[in-house]
Image (cartoon, rainbow, N blue to C red; front, side, top):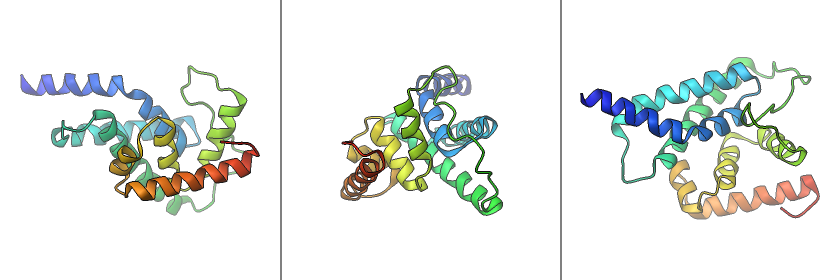
Length: 166
């Protein structure tokens, strides 16, 4: 069965790269239920797009592209729908992965990332995950020079915010 084999391959690849789901979902959603919903939407879109996945590129790069596109779409849709309804008392990022506890520095970093605009958020997540400027450019559909410039500006912003070398 070709369909069964494709499904097993998909499940295996998603399982292998599930941390991408955690990173993207946690960066674009405040509440655990919203993070779960976003992760589910990402997986659905990954499955729909899987037949067109170009195996010449790394699965993780393709997965990031799909995940970030879904997250940005959901973010924009929610932003239009809710228009500043979120309470200032709501906790910011709870955890990267429910099973891990974060250091104070890492928690502050994720809170700073949460406040960024969607493109900047995507850039910094990919950068912190160790992707090259070329890979980031491919995922986000911008030039490698643009990636370098934006990351440099983000580093400067974080440096000013945290008062130390980034």
